Image (cartoon, rainbow, N blue to C red):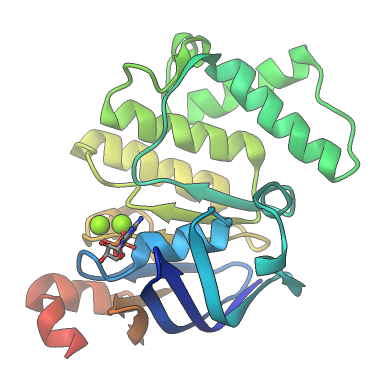
Amino acid sequence: MLKIENLHATVADKPILKGLSLSINAGEIHAIMGPNGAGKSTLSYVLGGRPGYEVTDGSATFDGQDLLDMDPHERAAAGLFLGFQYPVEIPGVSNVQFLRESLNAQRKARGEEPLSGGDFLKLAREKAGLLKLDMDMLKRPVNVGFSGGEKKRNEMVQMGILDPKLAILDETDSGLDIDALRVVGDGINAIMRRPDKAVLLITHYQRLLDYVQPDFVHVLAAGRIVKSGGPELALELEREGYAEIAA
Ligand code: ADP
Ligand code: MG
Ligand code: MG
């Protein structure tokens, strides 16, 4: 589904990704762990097509299409979802409005009919229930005044509604207490653990992986994948630290 080969990228002319390769098949959950500043968020921004992140070498394909050649909205319409370490607040735009417009823009790009207001609300209610997020939260401006946990659950509701093929989730566990972590983990499993979908979980800590068990774990250090393994690698990292493993 996703094939990244020898990816090099710069931010503000500074090389950050330095030859990163990674393949993800449908049905798989991969985790990327690594020290602060390794380039984890940069990888997700590059894959999402964020301006300012310049690819200088290598390739990335999504379902066989050249991902790096697509606009951000084309990537989203093709089924790529990005969850951010710091979800943005959008004052003046309600969650429901934002989600419905996002979904219908993607449907339009795929040549599908927009969802009616009633059908959309039904879908939103179902996904909000899954993430134990009150429907009232969906009527409020996007993320404004939401707690860290509410923002993350809101983002997972968004993921449920958009129903992507591949979700790249950057530190979805940051700022979550243990109950919210379980809800978010269960949500990721319910929405994404399917034979036709895949997930790339970017995380500092092992704890999210207790809830969303990865098939593969990779260590990203200094802009490259320096080690790959099974779920046991995450436990090893937690025990021994990155310095030891990435050396
Ligand atoms: P991680 O998510 O693994 O902690 P990041 O991808 O956020 O790492 O950052 C990788 C490196 O890129 C860091 O050294 C960071 O300071 C640098 N970096 C990220 N964004 C910018 C930017 N806009 N301008 C300059 N340097 C940046
Ligand atoms: Mg960081
Ligand atoms: Mg980061």
